[in-house]
Length: 225
Image 1 (spheres, rainbow, N blue to C red):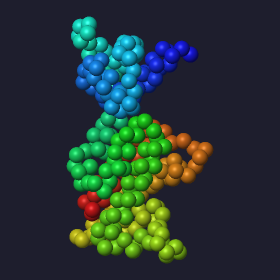
Image 2 (cartoon, rainbow, N blue to C red):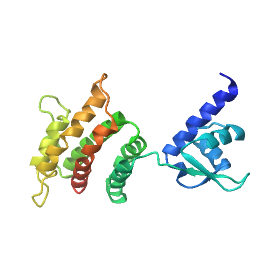
Image 3 (cartoon, rainbow, N blue to C red):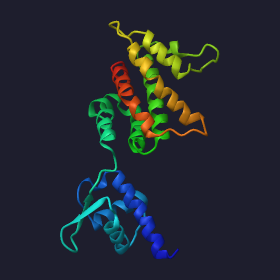
């Protein structure tokens, strides 16, 4: 492979990632694309390499005049279904109430949602487990999540979900409504599969039907944090 072809391919990978990140929702000049690649990956591709890739990208549309062309996405990298779920999952209200304690997990989930089923399933499970634990801790009953068979250990997520459906916060409402607790067992299974089964893959199409229930669970738990 020639050096020129190699550079074009590398630039193409970077530009596709920018598109997937929503970089081209607004029109971008050649310089803005070049600067975006440099900031994110440190690459300094030639203007001709970037220009060639931009012209060939079937997901972008070019407008304007020569030397001042702008490139904007022709198609969204995400399906409408995923965009609609993201609007609820990453709503300003929910993310704001989760706060800094969940910033790393939310940032990672935002990066992987719609791209990697395995990473998404693992992160959804981790956030759920962390929310239950912190909700119990804030209400002074974290000891009810301790594993009696192992000092310093916690019970598994399935037991955590059961405890969240039984225990009640001030006012008499459970941490998780029992119906919600029952519905989210699917994401527990998918998260376990992604983390512990090296031969199994989890795809987004399997996760999407679970999302309305996991979002409701997050909304129920966040009021207890």
